[in-house]
Image (cartoon, rainbow, N blue to C red; front, side, top):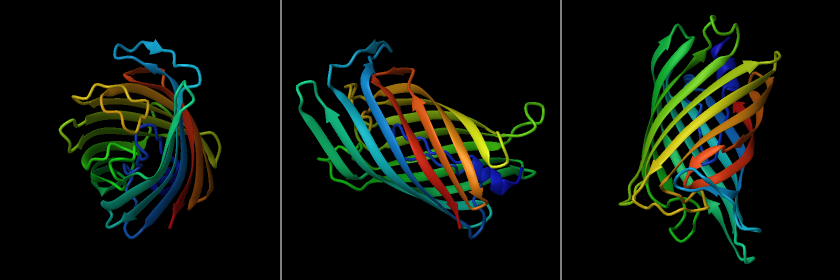
Length: 276
């Protein structure tokens, strides 16, 4: 499977915690551009307590987040890529007494560089990405943690070994993120994705995400964008269609079966991938 097709097929942005996930494991290519407009939904009514037990939410209460995200990538060289992502977020937190709090506006700007450390015969790639995070809103608006931050990510991806499948690809990412505040948080995540073509232009992929956020602030927050100390496991199933070599679309859904101090969330995403 050619690198260009792989890079189009593997893209699936999953937003549950932050409105950004990159596919930067695959190099974009020198002087090439990629643009990904996306829309996401997250909703929760129930929650997990600190011991992982499910707690039923109050009738009529719940949290919903809608976001539109724009991701842009540019290939500076064959190994080095520039990436940037910015979301527009709308959130609504409903309470059992009928009150509700809504917020909307630009979220966190995510910007950085991805470097391909090693390519294994252009079949598999090992890359590292370093990024910065900057809030585009004031602290009185709950569209994120409101703090600057940084992230380093190690990524390994490529074709599935022939001993496993004759077609398909995988993508794994291990990331550490730090927000520069006395409460943190420090965040660790690991994700693994396996994709398989079901026709010449269609594919399915399954992603598993493990996420842990550490903070001295242990309070539960139904607004997932503002939570600090929590953990979850979140699988997602996605379908992609490639219209041309330069244009693809993806649609997907996810659910949170296990977690600690976080919502029992579910939702979905739809996005377009445009290579220029």
